[in-house]
Amino acid sequence: MFVSFIFCFIFVVFMIVGRLEADRKRYENELIESRKKLIQINAERDRFFAIIAHDLMSPSFAIPELLGIIMSDYDSCTDKEIKESITAIYKSSIQICALLENLLTWSRSITGNITFSPAITDIVKLFDSVYLLNAERIRAKSIEIKNLLPAELNACCDSHMIETVIRNIVSNAIKFTPEKGVIVFEGQITESGIAFSIKNSGAGMDEDIRKKLFKVGERISRPGTNGEHGTGIGLLIVKEFIDRHRGSITVDSEPGRGCSFKVLLPKLMLKK
Image (cartoon, rainbow, N blue to C red; front, side):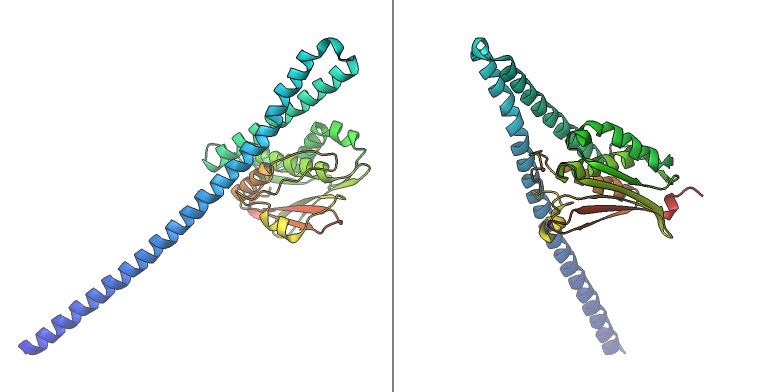
């Protein structure tokens, strides 16, 4: 009896030790994976801020350089030359402000400092607002806007976030659409929710660029058809805000065949 007890005791001890060893290895592997993810996140963060610093530096340096030229050669500059320099300074200032605004919005979003306030929203009106905001840029490129949205397309969403989503995608479409090109707005109610898309007749993009669109630390910014600059932060904001709505975004594009961004908002966000 005593021997049997000893064997049982030893068996239980071995079982416990085996379980503890298995748990130790599992926790050790989890710790290793966590360290790898942390290293990757830090590397992506460093690349991201390097990109921001580079893109912020160019327009920032342009302003004092242009002002210096005007100040040193003011008496010999023609009115046309002064106007051209002031226009360049204005564009650089706008670029800096847009970059800082997007950077602030993105940082507030990932730190949870933006309130999510869903309400019944007219998506068509959001498109109208974004169109008016970009009317001058659209006119400057003689872009044709084809609005194929239905008369009514309502969703229960955070109107500020979704307008920001639409604004960034439309801004991107204008940037890469050539003069006299076409941008198409479409939308519909589906079985799973609502969908809207923004298509353009621009240069398009290859698969490698598409895979990097919504990744922090990947440099995807390309000059637009008129040399417009950007950083790609706008698309990070788009992805962040759509995720907050439990929605999805897909990109369909090929080089030379334009680009289409399609956003889906789930049915649970729809007005009943």
